Length: 45
Image 1 (cartoon, helix red, strand yellow):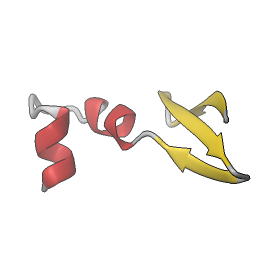
Image 2 (image 1 turned 90 degrees about the vertical axis):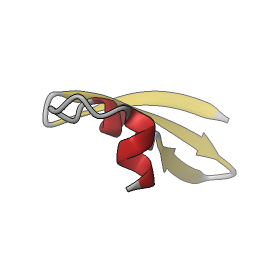
Image 3 (image 1 turned 180 degrees about the vertical axis):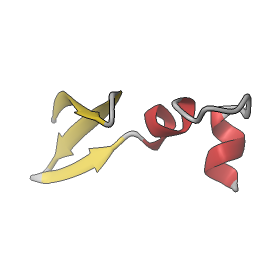
Image 4 (image 1 turned 135 degrees about the vertical axis):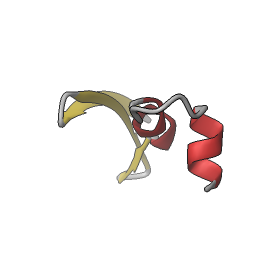
C-alpha cells in the first residue's frame, strides 16, 4: 500500500494504491466544497 497526494484544481487529494489499484479520498474533495456543508453531508448527497 502506498500513499500519494495529487493536486486537482488547487485541491490536494490523497491517493492510495492497494493491490495495484488507485483509490482517491472523496472526503478531501468534499471538504473543498465552497459552501458550509460538512464533508459527510456532501458525500451522502
